[in-house]
Image (cartoon, rainbow over all chains, first blue to last red; front, side, top):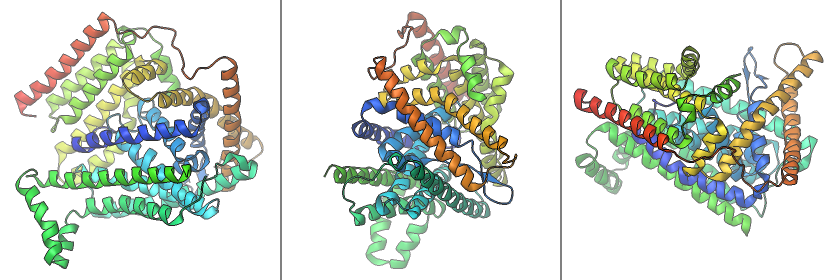
Length: 297
Length: 240
């Protein structure tokens, strides 16, 4: 899931790098406000902990083993903003020191795993509280959202992928998501058993519907972009089925696009995908802000 | 371990080691952007970029073979997608993907192999990275060695208790990670106390100066013009 340099097309990595700067900056500001700056060592040591925890293998049957990814675990144990900061630090070290993920592609990897992944891992906990189901769903959603985003970015970049391979990949995503969910739940229950004070409680009153809507929108956005990038003509088909006003609504601006700015179909596809990704970014920021407001209230 | 090797490389002395971190970061970005924006990598263009990367390795006095081998770590991921391109009948694109990702990784290795992480982070900070982030990265890197060793000790202890060479059972592995988490948490508290006792003000200090000198500027100018000249000549000569 760590995208190296050279695979993403220029519009994709450039716009994701641009989008990642305010997103990570916002998370860093929030983290500094939530934890006093003197707790910086905790964030660093937790990053090192995730690295070390990834060395411990879990048996998952048939002689294969898996390891923790950690986005949801960090989000739940330290809070979402601190989780984003720690994941950002981990991914930066991986990109620079371990050549795991590219430097130009860092923005894409950060948005997939440090931002969307951590947020998707945190929302179920926020929604359902300290339950095994919430831990499991957090781990699973986190991996599912990051992987779908990474795959759709690659597809948007014009990397060809045969249909059967795509189907197998999606199946693997689901399996990986279930494994991460199970590991996250088991580890968090273990931590809770050792010392209940180590897992941060969601603060303030929980407005369930709002967080639920946020969770659904993050999931839909990730899966939706994936579907959109595999079936670029879906919107047109939709327009054809509903006809009338819908057709004019969709066909009008699209026709303009084709005529003026985006002559090549590749550029069109990229522009549509980027608009989708920008939308997700906006939704994520909005959710973050709403959660922040709830907390302070 | 990989990061120990890189750490050793970064403590060497060479023309590249002596340059300011900011200069090297800007040159790396210029190289990566030039490489990424070349739409079709012909063998000639690939050779030019490879020559630049190798020049960097030699200027930094880094072991050529070892570095080129370590950069190959990106190849399995890229090769998967290169195979799909090949199946789709686009052989030049497949080759381009492999060359781009491989040379990018090699160039990043030149940067981290000639710049100690503390200097690199200070450079990134003065280029605009948030200070909280660079501090966290620095702590992460520092305690990466410590916590990994603790994890190894725990694995050894589990082996001694007779868990066998196969991976730990699921619950046992989860328990080990939970214990590691609690210990890391405790360690962070201790570190924080010790730092406060020594008067930590929210910023780590470097012993050497971080001024950009005349030599750094000359090096930056030479490097940038080389990359720019290569990119534009590729564009003009071969319409790339």
